[in-house]
Length: 106
Image 1 (cartoon, rainbow, N blue to C red):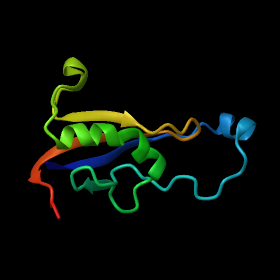
Image 2 (cartoon, one colour):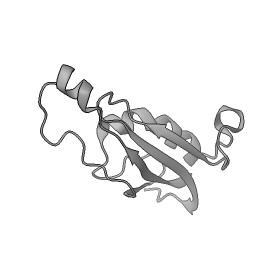
Image 3 (cartoon, one colour):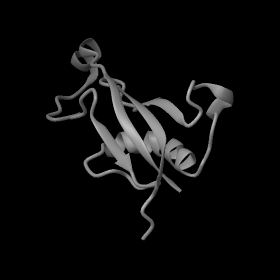
Image 4 (cartoon, helix red, strand yellow):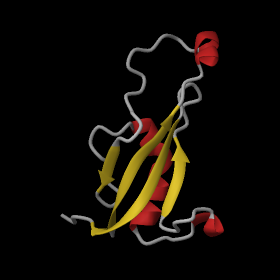
């Protein structure tokens, strides 16, 4: 099993939808572009958003276990995936890449 790097590639806010539909939330998302996290195999990195992890973790699991060319070659790098969290008000796009480094197995 390998480690995976998760990089925040883009953050977006849909202010019009937030104003129309969302109850006020303080500190809803604290991700910033360029921020990176290392997943030790399939373990959620510390301080990583639980909601985003729920969406991307199946891909981290697959990539950390050697999966390649997810969705028949969708990505130029077959050992990666571009994914977004499911927050309809402020989605975040993540690049997940399998690393050559083995995960620390306890």
